Length: 205
Image 1 (cartoon, helix red, strand yellow):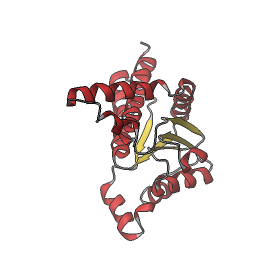
Image 2: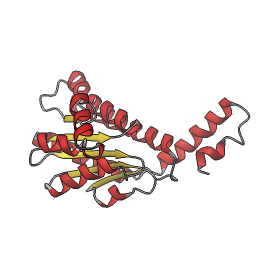
Image 3: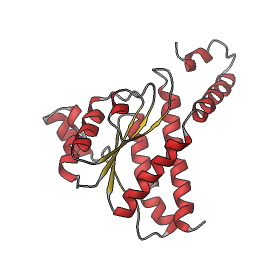
């Protein structure tokens, strides 16, 4: 039984369960290495300065975070700062026709690497978002970019899985296996931290 599930027997109501969940989430957030977040920011800033594209990939809740990240660090920062040198983020999760064609014709494990083979340019980077770190399609994409000489950035959970050993830069949200909620919450919060940081940095605030 993971830490989230342990909260239920001691909760007399949904409100009490929520308070316990919030408290546990805070402990998870507090355990994240701030230097790893600094390194993540530096990777993104380097890609922005070079005009490189940063592709983002994930499944399920991580796919939703990938989409949100592409918007928040892309258009939203341009809108709020007026910068002429934006982040070039591209979510590999949002191309329904291409994604489903690759899944149907080749296999779901190729839905991200198949797109990278079309769009990746030397110097580009990839952010992989995964709670387990073991999803075959994101592992294949990370391996492909690594072999192509690109930087691979991981937002991971649990024990880091296979991706932890592939990524050049990792922000690891350490939890017990199966604690998808807190990991996905933390990854989305990290996206908002990055967004607000760069909004202020690029607007001179």
